Image 1 (cartoon, one colour):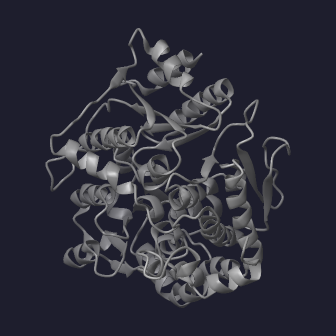
Image 2: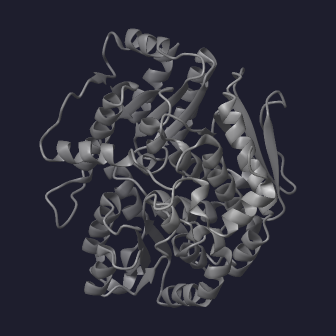
Length: 499
């Protein structure tokens, strides 16, 4: 390192964009608002808690957040780790276009007693706006809706036009994956009764020196070939890697470089020398994981509000790792490709589908060929364009275990389309070391999207095919399987065929 930790801390806290690039580089100087969020957001705590209290007082049994990526992952973690305080409604995140998942959320709430938070930095996110249209059709009551968005976005105008209960502005100088401590994370946290002041105080108290050194370690491990950052937590923090996964993958997976975050992987029988391990343990809880055979770092989390401190530390570390790797940590240059291909499919340009039917007599042979393409140092990415329910998650964990032990490689799972706003950047922009298995199904009942001529089934099918085409365009190794209408049976067939 040609720069000391102390100097780097000083430059980071001064929001010096030349740490990562030349002056004037797009999305550098105007993406550093996260650096002092613990201080700047403290002035907005009364506003956010007041909005939450007003909404709850209007007769609210449930909160549904409609968002993707940076708009949804932090609220999901806050709900899981912090829990719901007495007198506050539970929070459900809808970040899927699968019609079965959309319908399951609809069936679980009474729209007349639900607050819908429509959360999008750009204001035009397809999945978010589709969810809004679906639930607006069920209520047509603006008082049941709150928007969180950047100033001047189309969503801000939509909220005003339809009489939303509140339209909350987010700081435009903070990118989505660094926005946990902005209204994108804090307003949903207030709705479930979280202590916003406690969260921000914990984040303000982080050691910048320790955080910088952590980022240097991540970057150096990756440069040495240990680029599979494998995450394990104690039970109460199990949701945290889902947020950290986006931060690391989308920030660092570009220019044929990157760090591959491995979240939720079952403990395997063997690990390659491309691994580094990161353990998070809430005080009083133990972390189940592999033995201390590889480089890693252990993070002790004193209490649940310290979750915000770990978020801040991870953001600092990720930014520093970007400097070490020589990548721009605040842009996402390869995310748009899959969106473009999905739009082309929706407009009638389907391209090559290459779908393998689950009942194909050569399924095992094709999977053997796919497995044979996995090389040392690769990782396996399972792309599940399926509902995110416990049975499916359990089956995918079993599939990861079989693939990981057979190949000896790291495995990841992403539910589509949510991972397109998370790890999708890494898959297309990082090193060509990903070997992908895309799983789609046939929904039992499709669901129309009001105010359009689309259905959720058509949208998710287009997103899956668009992502496949984008991966192939980037020369990635990928196989597609149609599980058919019986997901459970289809997944069991794939697991059995892996051998």
